[in-house]
Image (tube, rainbow, N blue to C red):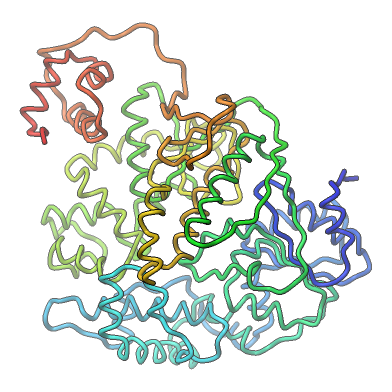
Length: 567
C-alpha cells in the first residue's frame, strides 16, 4: 500500500475532468496509477508520451494487478484505430534530398534552392500533422521560424513551400509514398474517433501536440491530464503545452522526492526568470529528497557540440577515466537528422569529396555552401557537426577515436565514470551527481532580449522554453548539482554547498599524488598537440596546461608559438 501525500490523495479522490501540474520528481506516475487503482471497475485508457514510459507503466500496472487499464502511446492508439493505414508502408522520417526527388525539385544554378525548399516543405508537413487544424492553409508556417535568414528565405518562397507541402501530404494520402508516423496520428485526429473508455489519463501532458490534444479533448470520458508545464522543451517538435491551454480544474504536486530544498530553491529561482519576459511561473517547489552516495554522474549540455567538447575535455584532463556513456548512444551525437556524419562534414571541409558517403553532403559544392544551406533551413543537428568541425577539424579523428575507445554500451551504463547527455535526451531521468554546461540561456541574455520582445521581434514562448531547459537540467539531480555561476539567477545564493556548487571540475576519481616530471625537449605526438590545442581553446593558462600535459611551461609556450595558436 502506498503512503500518499495530501496532494496525491486529493488527485486520486477527485471526480471529474482535471489537470495536474506536477513538479520534477513529485511522483506523478505513482499518483496516476493510484488514481486508476481507486477505480478497479472502470474502463481506463492511460496515454503515455513514448514507448519507454508505456513499458514502465505496464510493468507497474502488472505489479498492482490492474487489468482494467490499457496503456498506449498516442501513435500506437491511432495506428490501431485506423485500419486503412495499416496497409501503407510507414517510415520514421524523410531527408531533404528524398523530399526534393519525390516532388521533382531540381536546381540548375548550384544555389541549393531545391534542397532548401525541400527542408522547409518537410517541416511544414510535420507542423500540419502535429497541429489541430483541418487544412494546411489554416496555418502560418512562418510563425514557427525564429532564425532570421531561414525566415527570410521561407517568406520569399512561401507560396512554393505551401504548394509543395500540400502535394507531399496528398501523395501520402494516396499511398504513392510511405507515410510517416505523425501522418496517421493526424488522420486519427481528423476522423474524430470516440473511444470506449470511462476515464482517459494523459501523462506528460505538457509535451502533447495539437493533434494529440484535440483527439483527447473531444472524448466524452472523464479526462485527467498530468505533467509539468515548466518541462515543456519540445516546441521544435510542435508540442503545445496542453496544461496551459485546457480550462480544467487544477491541482498540484509541489513536493519533489528527488532533490532537497536547496535544489528546489534554485529551481524556483530559475523559473522566476520568466517574469522578465512577462510570464508569471506561479510555482511552489518543496524539496524532500535526501543526500545519498554518488553512484551515477552526468554532464548535461544544451547542444550536441558543447557536450562532445566537454567529453573531450574530460578525457584530456582525467587520464584515468576509462569508461564513459552517451545517453541515446554516441552515434546520435555524431550523425545529423539528415544522415550525414561528422566525418562527412570533415571530408567536405577538407575538400576530400571522394570520402563523403552521405548524399546531402555530396550535393554540397563546398563547405561554405553547406553553411549557407544551414542558415536558411535551421537544421540544428547538422549545424552542431559543422560547429565541431570548425573548432577541431584535423584533430577530430584523434578525439573521436579516444571517445569511442572509452564508450561503453547501455548494459554497462552503471559502470561509466561519467554519463553525457543533452537535456532533451535526459528528460525523465535522474542522476546522483549532475554537471551543467554553460551553453544554457543566462539571465543577462534574457534581459537583453526584452526590447526585441516588446518590438515583437522575439517570441517570449521560445525564450520561456530556453528557461525550461535550464530548469529540467537542474532538476535531474538527486544529491549534488554543479552549475556555472553565470547561470545562477540574481538573488539566489548558495546556502548548502554540499548540494549545489560552482565547482565544475570533473573529479570522477581521486587525483594521483605522484606528479609526472616535467618534460621540455621530448618529441610532441599528434595526440599531445591535439590536447594542447583543446586546452588552449578552453582558456587554460600556460601553467595549467603544463601541469595537465606533464611539460614545462617554456615547452608549452614554444609549442603554442610553433602551432600559431596565439590570438
